[in-house]
Length: 202
Ligand code: ATP
Image (cartoon, rainbow, N blue to C red):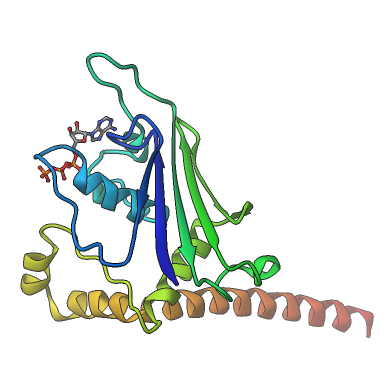
């Protein structure tokens, strides 16, 4: 899958809807300090399912909503839309054959956020797992934020392994295994309850 477009509206410094086209050959974003370069990358990470407000440089997740400036009032809603091309087979079931995949995350002040993939509401975990899977593909998606390089060098081996696993896309598989284990445990509980009932019938 290839990221083709990021649409940002009401997120951080982007009060007005802004389209960022990601064309082949894009290698950097330039601009004066504080103009919002990092906010573009944060919008991308946020829509990919980032759950840490701290990683978004805020105290709480609502802080990603445009807070207003001296001349402009704040918003109550922020929305980021990612358009992925060549995404066949990535969407959750009913959209398998749709070639372009649209992932939308929207947050409403005081109400938390919601995700949609091609119009269908999904859980944050579904979006995270989907991107973790893309990371395991041929064009691995690895994001390194400012300060992460020195953190990585100083990190404990276990923490460093976690970062490498994320980059290699293994993190998605681990999340899947965890989910499967939870389902298995639930099934075992159901089974023993059914056996109890059977025992009472005998
Ligand atoms: P630098 O080159 O210094 O790293 P940058 O271009 O990466 O800067 P960002 O860090 O992306 O800039 O953007 C910072 C700007 O975003 C600041 O002006 C800050 O006031 C603004 N900003 C961040 N969050 C919000 C918000 N919730 N509402 C309004 N503006 C915000």
